[in-house]
Image 1 (cartoon, rainbow, N blue to C red):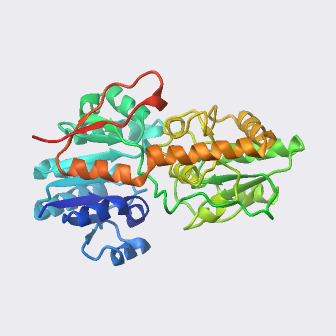
Image 2 (image 1 turned 45 degrees about the vertical axis):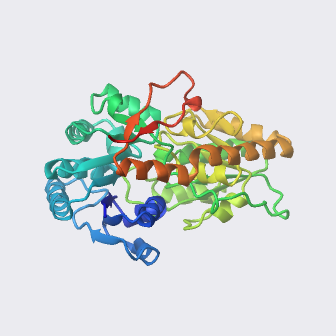
Image 3 (image 1 turned 90 degrees about the vertical axis):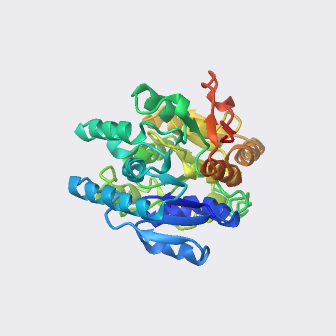
Amino acid sequence: MKKVIVVANTTWNIYNFRLGILRKLVREGTEVVVVAPVDTYIHYLQQLPTVRHIPLRNLNPQGRGLFRSILLLWELFRIYRTERPEAILHFTIKPNIFGSIAAKWAGIRSIPTVTGLGYTFLHGHWLNKLTIQLYRYAFSGLDCVIFHNRDDRELFDRLGIVPKSCSGVVNGSGVNTNYFRPLPKPQTDTTFTFLFIGRLLYDKGIKEFVEAAAHLREWGVTVSCRVVGDLASTNPDAVPREKFLHWIKQRYIEYQGAAADVRPFIKQCDVLVLPSYREGMPRAILEALAMGKPIITTDVAGCREAICDKTGLLVPVKNSRALAEAMHYFFQKDQQEVQRMGDAARARALDRFDERLIVETYVQLCHGARIRQPDYPANPIAEPAFELVNAG
Protein backbone atom coordinates (compact mmCIF):
# COMPACT_ATOMS: atom_id res chain seq x y z
CA MET A 1 0.00 0.00 0.00
CA LYS A 2 1.28 3.45 -0.91
CA LYS A 3 1.64 6.12 1.76
CA VAL A 4 1.12 9.86 1.24
CA ILE A 5 1.68 12.62 3.79
CA VAL A 6 -0.32 15.87 3.63
CA VAL A 7 1.13 18.86 5.52
CA ALA A 8 -0.44 22.24 6.35
CA ASN A 9 0.01 24.99 8.92
CA THR A 10 -3.32 24.32 10.70
CA THR A 11 -5.85 21.53 11.05
CA TRP A 12 -8.37 24.22 10.08
CA ASN A 13 -6.67 24.32 6.67
CA ILE A 14 -6.92 20.55 6.34
CA TYR A 15 -10.61 20.57 7.26
CA ASN A 16 -11.61 23.43 4.98
CA PHE A 17 -9.44 22.77 1.91
CA ARG A 18 -7.93 19.26 1.84
CA LEU A 19 -10.67 16.79 2.87
CA GLY A 20 -11.47 16.01 -0.77
CA ILE A 21 -7.88 14.90 -1.40
CA LEU A 22 -7.82 12.82 1.78
CA ARG A 23 -11.10 11.08 0.92
CA LYS A 24 -9.98 10.25 -2.62
CA LEU A 25 -6.65 8.83 -1.48
CA VAL A 26 -8.32 6.74 1.24
CA ARG A 27 -10.86 5.35 -1.25
CA GLU A 28 -7.98 4.25 -3.47
CA GLY A 29 -6.41 2.31 -0.62
CA THR A 30 -3.59 4.77 0.07
CA GLU A 31 -2.31 5.09 3.63
CA VAL A 32 -2.78 8.79 4.48
CA VAL A 33 -0.93 10.67 7.20
CA VAL A 34 -1.73 14.30 8.01
CA VAL A 35 0.93 16.47 9.66
CA ALA A 36 -0.35 19.75 11.12
CA PRO A 37 -0.72 21.57 14.44
CA VAL A 38 -3.80 20.39 16.31
CA ASP A 39 -6.70 22.81 16.72
CA THR A 40 -10.47 22.55 17.18
CA TYR A 41 -10.89 21.13 13.67
CA ILE A 42 -9.21 17.86 14.65
CA HIS A 43 -12.75 16.45 14.61
CA TYR A 44 -12.21 15.83 10.89
CA LEU A 45 -10.77 12.45 11.96
CA GLN A 46 -14.30 11.32 12.83
CA GLN A 47 -15.08 11.45 9.12
CA LEU A 48 -11.82 9.73 8.14
CA PRO A 49 -10.99 7.23 10.90
CA THR A 50 -8.24 5.50 8.88
CA VAL A 51 -6.23 8.72 8.53
CA ARG A 52 -3.43 9.20 11.04
CA HIS A 53 -2.75 12.71 12.35
CA ILE A 54 0.72 13.63 13.60
CA PRO A 55 0.64 16.93 15.53
CA LEU A 56 3.24 19.56 14.69
CA ARG A 57 4.51 21.18 17.87
CA ASN A 58 6.88 23.79 16.42
CA LEU A 59 4.77 25.46 13.73
CA ASN A 60 3.30 28.86 14.52
CA PRO A 61 1.88 30.39 11.30
CA GLN A 62 2.53 33.95 12.53
CA GLY A 63 5.81 33.25 14.35
CA ARG A 64 9.13 34.53 12.96
CA GLY A 65 11.67 33.14 15.42
CA LEU A 66 14.75 31.51 13.90
CA PHE A 67 15.10 28.96 16.71
CA ARG A 68 11.50 27.78 16.31
CA SER A 69 12.01 27.46 12.53
CA ILE A 70 15.04 25.25 13.10
CA LEU A 71 13.01 23.11 15.50
CA LEU A 72 10.24 22.84 12.89
CA LEU A 73 12.71 21.76 10.21
CA TRP A 74 14.16 19.08 12.49
CA GLU A 75 10.69 17.93 13.58
CA LEU A 76 9.54 17.49 9.98
CA PHE A 77 12.75 15.72 8.99
CA ARG A 78 12.34 13.19 11.82
CA ILE A 79 8.70 12.55 10.83
CA TYR A 80 9.55 12.05 7.16
CA ARG A 81 12.53 9.82 7.90
CA THR A 82 10.34 7.65 10.16
CA GLU A 83 7.26 7.48 7.92
CA ARG A 84 9.06 7.13 4.54
CA PRO A 85 6.05 7.99 2.31
CA GLU A 86 6.07 7.80 -1.47
CA ALA A 87 5.12 11.51 -1.71
CA ILE A 88 4.45 14.52 0.49
CA LEU A 89 1.94 17.24 -0.37
CA HIS A 90 2.91 20.55 1.23
CA PHE A 91 0.45 23.43 1.57
CA THR A 92 0.94 26.95 3.03
CA ILE A 93 4.19 28.87 3.40
CA LYS A 94 6.14 27.26 6.25
CA PRO A 95 5.36 23.67 5.24
CA ASN A 96 6.30 24.59 1.66
CA ILE A 97 9.69 25.94 2.71
CA PHE A 98 10.76 23.87 5.70
CA GLY A 99 8.80 20.78 4.68
CA SER A 100 10.37 20.76 1.22
CA ILE A 101 13.85 21.13 2.74
CA ALA A 102 13.18 18.31 5.20
CA ALA A 103 11.83 16.08 2.42
CA LYS A 104 14.93 16.81 0.31
CA TRP A 105 17.20 15.79 3.20
CA ALA A 106 15.13 12.64 3.74
CA GLY A 107 15.18 11.75 0.03
CA ILE A 108 11.40 11.84 -0.41
CA ARG A 109 9.44 13.42 -3.27
CA SER A 110 7.88 16.71 -2.25
CA ILE A 111 5.02 18.44 -4.09
CA PRO A 112 4.55 21.95 -2.65
CA THR A 113 1.58 24.15 -3.53
CA VAL A 114 1.98 27.94 -3.40
CA THR A 115 -1.56 28.91 -2.40
CA GLY A 116 -0.60 32.56 -1.96
CA LEU A 117 2.43 34.70 -1.15
CA GLY A 118 1.53 35.87 2.34
CA TYR A 119 2.29 39.04 4.30
CA THR A 120 6.05 38.45 4.62
CA PHE A 121 6.57 37.96 0.89
CA LEU A 122 4.45 40.92 -0.18
CA HIS A 123 5.80 43.59 2.19
CA GLY A 124 9.26 44.89 1.39
CA HIS A 125 11.67 44.35 4.25
CA TRP A 126 14.55 42.03 5.12
CA LEU A 127 12.21 39.10 5.76
CA ASN A 128 11.08 39.33 2.14
CA LYS A 129 14.65 38.79 0.90
CA LEU A 130 15.20 35.97 3.37
CA THR A 131 11.96 34.27 2.32
CA ILE A 132 13.00 34.37 -1.35
CA GLN A 133 16.36 32.77 -0.52
CA LEU A 134 14.65 30.06 1.52
CA TYR A 135 12.22 29.35 -1.32
CA ARG A 136 15.13 29.06 -3.78
CA TYR A 137 16.85 26.44 -1.68
CA ALA A 138 13.65 24.58 -0.75
CA PHE A 139 12.37 24.31 -4.32
CA SER A 140 15.70 23.63 -6.05
CA GLY A 141 15.71 20.25 -7.73
CA LEU A 142 11.96 19.67 -7.41
CA ASP A 143 10.18 18.32 -10.49
CA CYS A 144 6.74 19.58 -9.49
CA VAL A 145 5.74 22.88 -7.85
CA ILE A 146 2.07 23.84 -8.01
CA PHE A 147 0.68 27.39 -8.06
CA HIS A 148 -2.89 28.59 -7.72
CA ASN A 149 -2.50 31.38 -10.27
CA ARG A 150 -0.33 32.29 -13.23
CA ASP A 151 1.06 35.51 -11.81
CA ASP A 152 2.68 33.74 -8.86
CA ARG A 153 4.17 31.14 -11.21
CA GLU A 154 5.58 33.91 -13.43
CA LEU A 155 6.98 35.72 -10.38
CA PHE A 156 8.75 32.65 -9.01
CA ASP A 157 10.25 31.98 -12.45
CA ARG A 158 11.40 35.61 -12.76
CA LEU A 159 12.99 35.55 -9.30
CA GLY A 160 14.86 32.35 -10.13
CA ILE A 161 13.03 30.32 -7.47
CA VAL A 162 11.57 27.63 -9.74
CA PRO A 163 11.57 27.43 -13.56
CA LYS A 164 8.33 27.09 -15.50
CA SER A 165 9.45 23.69 -16.76
CA CYS A 166 9.08 22.36 -13.21
CA SER A 167 5.83 24.10 -12.28
CA GLY A 168 2.17 24.26 -13.17
CA VAL A 169 -1.09 25.92 -12.18
CA VAL A 170 -4.23 24.33 -10.79
CA ASN A 171 -7.42 26.29 -10.22
CA GLY A 172 -7.15 26.76 -6.48
CA SER A 173 -8.30 24.25 -3.88
CA GLY A 174 -11.59 23.78 -5.68
CA VAL A 175 -15.11 24.04 -4.32
CA ASN A 176 -17.72 21.42 -3.52
CA THR A 177 -20.36 22.38 -6.06
CA ASN A 178 -22.96 20.16 -4.42
CA TYR A 179 -22.52 21.80 -1.02
CA PHE A 180 -22.25 25.28 -2.56
CA ARG A 181 -25.18 25.36 -4.97
CA PRO A 182 -27.63 28.08 -6.04
CA LEU A 183 -30.27 28.88 -3.42
CA PRO A 184 -33.02 31.48 -4.03
CA LYS A 185 -32.74 34.77 -2.20
CA PRO A 186 -35.71 35.22 0.18
CA GLN A 187 -38.45 37.23 -1.53
CA THR A 188 -38.96 39.24 1.64
CA ASP A 189 -35.41 40.62 1.34
CA THR A 190 -35.85 43.27 -1.37
CA THR A 191 -32.77 45.38 -0.57
CA PHE A 192 -29.95 45.05 -3.10
CA THR A 193 -27.12 43.47 -1.10
CA PHE A 194 -23.35 43.42 -1.57
CA LEU A 195 -21.35 40.93 0.50
CA PHE A 196 -17.71 40.89 1.58
CA ILE A 197 -16.34 37.61 2.98
CA GLY A 198 -12.80 37.37 4.28
CA ARG A 199 -10.42 38.04 7.10
CA LEU A 200 -10.60 41.67 8.16
CA LEU A 201 -7.20 42.59 6.76
CA TYR A 202 -6.20 45.68 4.80
CA ASP A 203 -4.77 43.40 2.09
CA LYS A 204 -8.23 41.90 1.59
CA GLY A 205 -9.55 45.32 0.58
CA ILE A 206 -11.93 45.78 3.49
CA LYS A 207 -11.00 49.48 3.73
CA GLU A 208 -11.93 50.03 0.06
CA PHE A 209 -15.20 48.15 0.55
CA VAL A 210 -16.16 50.41 3.44
CA GLU A 211 -15.16 53.54 1.51
CA ALA A 212 -17.17 52.36 -1.51
CA ALA A 213 -20.19 51.86 0.75
CA ALA A 214 -19.70 55.43 1.98
CA HIS A 215 -19.59 56.69 -1.63
CA LEU A 216 -22.86 54.94 -2.42
CA ARG A 217 -24.50 56.58 0.56
CA GLU A 218 -23.24 60.00 -0.57
CA TRP A 219 -24.77 59.31 -4.01
CA GLY A 220 -28.14 58.51 -2.44
CA VAL A 221 -27.97 54.82 -3.42
CA THR A 222 -29.85 52.61 -0.96
CA VAL A 223 -28.09 49.25 -0.70
CA SER A 224 -26.93 46.88 2.01
CA CYS A 225 -23.17 46.30 2.35
CA ARG A 226 -22.57 43.29 4.58
CA VAL A 227 -19.33 41.92 5.98
CA VAL A 228 -18.62 38.39 7.16
CA GLY A 229 -15.22 37.77 8.72
CA ASP A 230 -13.19 37.26 11.86
CA LEU A 231 -12.47 40.44 13.82
CA ALA A 232 -10.07 38.81 16.28
CA SER A 233 -6.96 38.45 14.13
CA THR A 234 -3.30 38.43 15.14
CA ASN A 235 -2.18 39.15 11.59
CA PRO A 236 0.02 42.30 11.41
CA ASP A 237 -2.16 43.54 8.55
CA ALA A 238 -5.40 43.27 10.53
CA VAL A 239 -7.68 46.32 10.78
CA PRO A 240 -7.54 47.66 14.39
CA ARG A 241 -10.62 46.73 16.35
CA GLU A 242 -11.41 50.34 17.24
CA LYS A 243 -11.28 51.43 13.60
CA PHE A 244 -13.55 48.62 12.49
CA LEU A 245 -16.05 49.37 15.25
CA HIS A 246 -16.05 53.00 14.07
CA TRP A 247 -17.02 51.84 10.56
CA ILE A 248 -19.88 49.85 12.04
CA LYS A 249 -21.01 52.82 14.14
CA GLN A 250 -21.09 55.01 11.01
CA ARG A 251 -23.39 52.38 9.46
CA TYR A 252 -21.36 52.16 6.30
CA ILE A 253 -21.48 48.39 6.65
CA GLU A 254 -23.53 45.72 8.41
CA TYR A 255 -21.20 43.39 10.27
CA GLN A 256 -22.47 39.82 10.38
CA GLY A 257 -19.63 38.40 12.47
CA ALA A 258 -17.54 35.34 11.68
CA ALA A 259 -19.26 32.26 10.27
CA ALA A 260 -18.32 28.61 9.91
CA ASP A 261 -20.99 28.27 7.20
CA VAL A 262 -21.13 31.21 4.78
CA ARG A 263 -23.87 29.78 2.54
CA PRO A 264 -26.77 31.61 4.26
CA PHE A 265 -24.98 34.93 3.71
CA ILE A 266 -24.15 34.22 0.07
CA LYS A 267 -27.75 33.11 -0.45
CA GLN A 268 -29.02 36.49 0.77
CA CYS A 269 -26.68 38.64 -1.34
CA ASP A 270 -26.96 39.82 -4.92
CA VAL A 271 -23.24 40.33 -5.64
CA LEU A 272 -20.09 39.23 -3.86
CA VAL A 273 -17.35 41.87 -3.55
CA LEU A 274 -13.68 41.09 -2.86
CA PRO A 275 -11.36 44.10 -3.48
CA SER A 276 -8.22 42.18 -2.44
CA TYR A 277 -4.69 43.40 -3.15
CA ARG A 278 -3.52 39.92 -4.20
CA GLU A 279 -4.71 36.34 -3.82
CA GLY A 280 -3.74 32.79 -4.57
CA MET A 281 -7.18 31.70 -5.72
CA PRO A 282 -9.82 33.29 -3.47
CA ARG A 283 -12.10 30.69 -1.94
CA ALA A 284 -14.85 33.25 -1.24
CA ILE A 285 -15.13 33.97 -4.96
CA LEU A 286 -15.24 30.27 -5.86
CA GLU A 287 -17.99 29.62 -3.32
CA ALA A 288 -20.02 32.57 -4.59
CA LEU A 289 -19.57 31.45 -8.21
CA ALA A 290 -20.78 27.98 -7.28
CA MET A 291 -23.87 29.51 -5.65
CA GLY A 292 -24.60 31.50 -8.79
CA LYS A 293 -23.59 34.99 -7.68
CA PRO A 294 -21.88 37.64 -9.86
CA ILE A 295 -18.55 38.98 -8.61
CA ILE A 296 -16.83 42.34 -8.28
CA THR A 297 -13.13 41.96 -7.60
CA THR A 298 -9.79 43.58 -8.33
CA ASP A 299 -7.59 43.22 -11.39
CA VAL A 300 -4.80 41.48 -9.46
CA ALA A 301 -3.19 38.06 -9.24
CA GLY A 302 -5.63 35.31 -8.40
CA CYS A 303 -8.74 37.47 -8.49
CA ARG A 304 -8.66 38.18 -12.22
CA GLU A 305 -8.30 34.47 -13.02
CA ALA A 306 -11.31 33.52 -10.93
CA ILE A 307 -13.86 35.40 -13.06
CA CYS A 308 -14.56 36.37 -16.67
CA ASP A 309 -16.57 39.21 -18.20
CA LYS A 310 -19.73 37.07 -18.16
CA THR A 311 -19.53 36.50 -14.43
CA GLY A 312 -18.47 39.84 -12.97
CA LEU A 313 -16.38 43.00 -13.08
CA LEU A 314 -12.73 43.79 -12.42
CA VAL A 315 -11.78 47.12 -10.83
CA PRO A 316 -8.40 48.74 -10.17
CA VAL A 317 -6.79 47.78 -6.87
CA LYS A 318 -6.96 50.26 -3.95
CA ASN A 319 -9.53 52.39 -5.78
CA SER A 320 -12.66 52.76 -3.68
CA ARG A 321 -14.39 55.12 -6.11
CA ALA A 322 -14.01 52.70 -9.02
CA LEU A 323 -15.30 49.97 -6.72
CA ALA A 324 -18.32 52.10 -5.80
CA GLU A 325 -19.03 52.75 -9.49
CA ALA A 326 -18.94 49.01 -10.21
CA MET A 327 -21.34 48.39 -7.33
CA HIS A 328 -23.62 51.14 -8.63
CA TYR A 329 -23.49 49.52 -12.09
CA PHE A 330 -24.88 46.29 -10.67
CA PHE A 331 -27.48 48.15 -8.62
CA GLN A 332 -28.85 49.73 -11.79
CA LYS A 333 -28.92 46.51 -13.80
CA ASP A 334 -32.13 44.68 -14.56
CA GLN A 335 -32.63 41.72 -12.24
CA GLN A 336 -32.76 39.34 -15.19
CA GLU A 337 -29.31 40.53 -16.32
CA VAL A 338 -27.94 39.94 -12.83
CA GLN A 339 -29.48 36.46 -12.91
CA ARG A 340 -27.86 35.70 -16.27
CA MET A 341 -24.47 36.60 -14.84
CA GLY A 342 -25.22 34.40 -11.86
CA ASP A 343 -26.04 31.49 -14.15
CA ALA A 344 -22.76 32.04 -15.98
CA ALA A 345 -20.97 32.11 -12.61
CA ARG A 346 -22.40 28.72 -11.69
CA ALA A 347 -21.38 27.29 -15.07
CA ARG A 348 -17.83 28.58 -14.62
CA ALA A 349 -17.57 27.00 -11.18
CA LEU A 350 -18.68 23.63 -12.55
CA ASP A 351 -16.33 23.83 -15.53
CA ARG A 352 -13.15 25.09 -13.88
CA PHE A 353 -13.32 24.98 -10.09
CA ASP A 354 -15.21 21.83 -9.15
CA GLU A 355 -13.34 20.18 -6.30
CA ARG A 356 -13.41 16.80 -8.03
CA LEU A 357 -11.27 18.14 -10.87
CA ILE A 358 -8.69 19.55 -8.46
CA VAL A 359 -8.60 16.43 -6.32
CA GLU A 360 -8.00 14.16 -9.30
CA THR A 361 -5.04 16.31 -10.34
CA TYR A 362 -3.38 15.97 -6.93
CA VAL A 363 -4.02 12.24 -6.71
CA GLN A 364 -2.37 11.73 -10.10
CA LEU A 365 0.61 13.80 -8.97
CA CYS A 366 0.92 11.61 -5.87
CA HIS A 367 1.01 8.59 -8.17
CA GLY A 368 4.03 10.02 -10.00
CA ALA A 369 2.48 12.00 -12.84
CA ARG A 370 4.62 14.81 -14.23
CA ILE A 371 3.68 18.26 -15.48
CA ARG A 372 3.47 19.41 -19.06
CA GLN A 373 2.15 22.95 -19.33
CA PRO A 374 2.88 25.45 -22.10
CA ASP A 375 3.56 29.13 -21.56
CA TYR A 376 0.43 31.18 -21.16
CA PRO A 377 -1.29 32.91 -24.06
CA ALA A 378 -2.18 36.58 -24.00
CA ASN A 379 -5.66 35.85 -22.67
CA PRO A 380 -5.11 34.10 -19.33
CA ILE A 381 -8.81 33.31 -18.89
CA ALA A 382 -8.62 30.97 -21.88
CA GLU A 383 -5.65 29.02 -20.49
CA PRO A 384 -6.45 25.31 -19.95
CA ALA A 385 -5.33 23.35 -16.91
CA PHE A 386 -1.95 21.71 -17.27
CA GLU A 387 -1.72 18.23 -18.72
CA LEU A 388 -0.64 15.33 -16.54
CA VAL A 389 1.81 12.89 -18.07
CA ASN A 390 2.03 9.49 -16.39
CA ALA A 391 5.42 8.61 -15.01
CA GLY A 392 7.31 5.96 -16.90
